Image 1 (cartoon, helix red, strand yellow):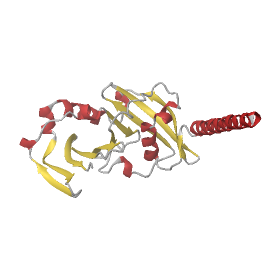
Image 2: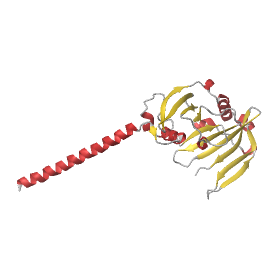
Image 3: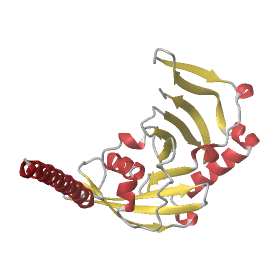
Image 4: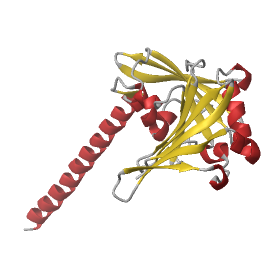
Length: 243
């Protein structure tokens, strides 16, 4: 009987040991998979890849790039993108196999260029570098945004009133209204968005710009459309389809 008890106890320890080895093996396999896929996402959509990149600290930290502020986007409710068209940057499909994306950080007054390339149909991060605001293709528009945000009088004078405004009602149907000048409330745009992202190959000659707020799985969806008139920029439409 004593030997039988010892055999049972030994068997239990053996099972626990085997289970522990199995758990360790599974964890090692998961770690290996994370390392192998640390900078890649199997997709042909650059913007899908980029959104995964900025909201996934694992992807960011795997690159060990000291210029990346790992909390810049992961802690935010949304990211603001700039595009040189009336559409959003997410509607673009003609991306080359190499993309440079500029990140302007208004809060920390610094600008970075992130480099990405597609290898074997997978987008990968390939490094970053600081860039002077004087070398930005969108310097004039960025200067306008800063003044538009901080100067309430200048802001009102650079909005085409009555301003077209679109939003959703309680039934998620689009409703529109015209906002008159006397009902406009000043807002600090650069303080609200904190940072602005745009592709380095943006078409600077296009007479439209839109700033597109894209939420991180929270339903935020906002677009501000600006139009260039006689070499000056004006806000011409606001849209808020957040749910």
